Length: 446
Image (cartoon, rainbow, N blue to C red):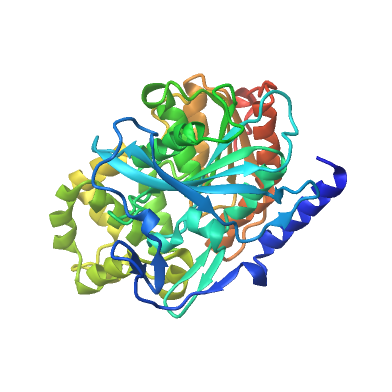
């Protein structure tokens, strides 16, 4: 791609990162325009997201696809569209209960030439926490990076990483995860198996899409931060058993919530306390046998909060539930963490979600902010140690930033400061350069 065209592309990415006025959608409540559309907090979810009654037999098989308009794009000098051409996807996956499930997402064919060596690679992007309402999904965020009305605030902040990858000439597929976007069930937030399968099957779906430059020989990478970091970490662990046909050249897992027992304690009472409700909702969606146990401990306020949060995005939760303590949601004033610790079925479920019990496939880069007290630094670093002990090829990065009074900022700042290095590391792996491991030189305290 000519230098001038690359500069235009970079300018477009900068505008997207700032979520300029052209990317703003003021959504208004409206009735569905078709019988299979739904409205979530005033936002009409397109009929595309309503899964059919019968799904294909193979994991990763496409159910349907359609053109997806990107919020911001520019005409290229050669007649192409920058940063690329997007396609909305629905594909089959398998959930943690072994049942078929429809998952939505998007594929973007980049206009830029691949800047590395070898064939054009494919990166599966696993989004960070966006919420639990279908209107919050990453694929819808590509079309409407900022949605604001009197009922919801949705921000497609993952678009920046996606556009940076596209600028390198990397093809991108992004998953919406199980139940986020697709309207047939609730999003199973931080369920490691559901998320891992959705990520790996997104790669399969992208490979089967007609008219792309991705081939069977395209190197594959995974990129994710926060919830996405847990999803890519779990996908790297499950690749060999679930998707042996998807060879991983490299995996970036930023701030992964590897130990949900630790993370549950940390988010309680924080700015993102609403994520505790998303977690509980996800647990109950994944294992309905836990529902009577939860109902026995939740008071009316707690039950109402879980219902309310089930349709919220991050912006909504920050406005409505910041600093809420779960002790106000329970019948006896115990915290959710205390109840989990005292309930073997709950604790067993969280133990099953633990990431770090398996050796990941391929090289991994794990980054965590040393001041992160929302998705605690210590449990993320422990994941690196667990993987190193299993002989994995781990590049551990401690992002050293001063701690501030906001747990949310302590968590979010490393995403921005480390993103360039993370993408450079990943594109090096996609070009076939060896990663090396710093397992045995990892700083003791970082």
